Length: 439
Image (cartoon, rainbow, N blue to C red; front, side, top):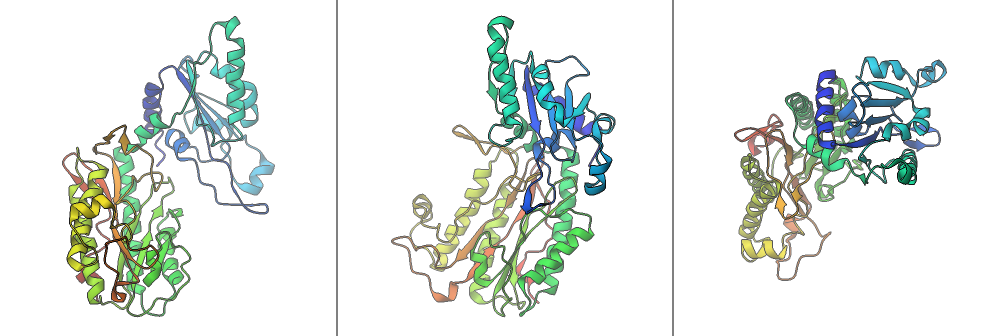
């Protein structure tokens, strides 16, 4: 997505939030993988959201105190043939203005020299400390210079504030163009899950399934996986962030796949499906699977304007606890078990997270004592699960777990957008009904 007008609109909204403060938003730096080899570049999401400029080491200034024509300034790596022959095309200063809407652009090497003058007259400086070690000393030095001159000049930025709350509140509510990109990420991700399920059979290696998934991502034009693909057979599924993907798939086990793609403009899908390796659930597997599915469907159904992410979690949790009590895996009452946290050896994570440019996307879940209410344009995952193993001790007063249940790990996850009157399940085309998973 590179419609300059969309990014200009975002900058206008950000300027309105800044008031008289100037914001300094750095791009991501290249990260070393090993020796002199770098990881593939991944742009900082805040920087991308405001600029769509996809090169490293850049810095964006947002200067509402400056005159028109000097308010959006980019510092970028200049065009340089000897560098581009090794690492590819650069837009340079001219391209930053012509293609990305900057009012002014300068070589990145001039940031230290020019920054104090650009920040002069701002009421405050919005900069995220602790994240950008190459830029932070320059910002602090510019601010310190203002403070030193304040007795003579009569003015200085009153404080250093974090831009995150302002910017992340904007990112939390997706525009129509963002939702369309997230539908595309969801489509590609769901197709990959369906392809993977078709090839799974006993004896296959987890990483062979991973290869099918990630090949589809690339063939469909995505950058690749949005996060480390999880292909976890049997007891491996009880390790929440299992990414070794090195075991064979065993007859009689379940397979949990947590995988989603990232598009060229960084919007992500995030889907989890669990199904039997041999095409048939055992009795215990089906009982737990149907329980997780009931909790997930109830939680998805609850997503609507005015509800909260906390309420979505509570909805799933109550269904899970009631079902575990019925199965004899928990003892007591629903209220008592939840109050004591006596379910956490079987379900130890929350039911979802915001989704967008980051997989665990930005945005508050609560403000003080109040949970943030869902609004149209917000997108969250809904992903309850159950994980039965000996890794965590059984709480005092709860029943010991029978061997027939151990090694069963189940999670079901969809990406859900809040709409004006309810919700849209972006990933519904990845099947999850038990009958659709058996063969």
